[in-house]
Amino acid sequence: MAIQIKDLEQLKVMRRAGLLVGQTLQLLRENIKAGMTTAALDAIAAANIKRGGGTSNFLGYHGFPATICVSINDEIVHGIPGTRVINDGDIVSIDCGAIIDGWHGDAAFSIGIGNLDPADQKLMDTCEESMWVGIAAGKNGARLSDIGHAIEQYIDSQGEYGILQEYGGHGIGTEMHQEPHVLNFGKGGNGPEIIPGMALAIEPMITRGSPKTKVLSDKWTVVSTDQSRGAHFENSYVICPDGKPFVLTALDGGRSELARFGIETSELLA
Image (tube, rainbow, N blue to C red; front, side, top):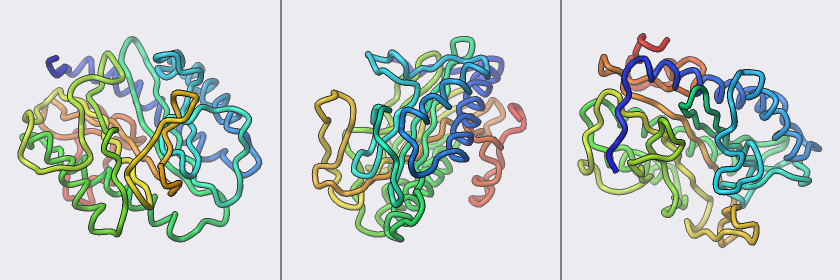
């Protein structure tokens, strides 16, 4: 399948969808606390997406029964919200998506609750920074595999972490998951050239132990086989027609984070 290339007007709608996702995740970040159920988080997200004029792209996706994925500790991705209570010391990973006028947004973050093991905080910090390293590497004219190479190099520089092999980032546009698949590891210099109009969701997923995973009996929740804790961060970004990147799901378009890499974000979607 060909990679979908978007024009500026289409990207403006994608920004609306991405901004709604970013705002929803920010609301969840502000409200999450020990003692809550994961279903309560899902209700907050559902209400905010509706209020923002969007619809969930997770709800009903291949039968997924909720608006967000909530994964705790050794659950790395695709956890189903329900009666589980969030406890002090947990790592909680939340993945969220929304559709506006047929265009998709998709992003995720991990957060520590209360008194956190410093090693768990380092895990999350490493995962989050690797996402920004990957976005920075995915500049106009780069090759697709440059992203995964940069992510892997950064993670490996920070310690012994397991990088999930079966799951990765993806193209995004009129569907949540499109070509190309974006690995979080591998050699640079391969794959299609990154060009204006190409939108990608970058999402490293790592554990404090083995990269090996299994899917639970609910057919969705992905856990580490060695029960090590995991982290997951994601943002969707695009190369604008001016050749500059813009992070569709970041509240500021990625301006502050990418500035650390000496990268100027586009003003076309600001």
